[in-house]
Length: 69
Image (cartoon, rainbow, N blue to C red; front, side, top):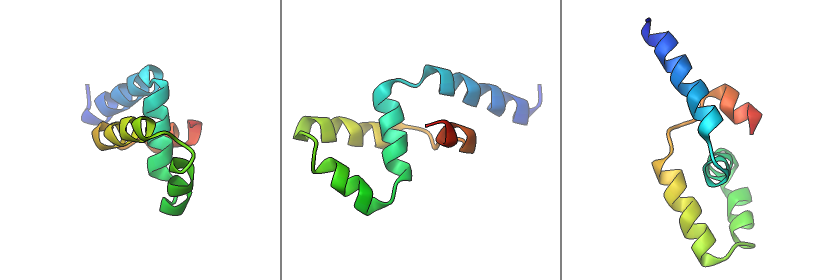
């Protein structure tokens, strides 16, 4: 199997297995900083910490994944 095919298969699997916090982390990482800051103003400290941990551990999403969010 070609490397590109393996990457495509891995990304499709990633898209299907994303949970809510992971989806939120991807979305927040794609938004402009000022928008993310404004969203964080409405969250509790433990929610922000959880999202930041997710943002730091997720793989960059494919363009298709980002569009689907």
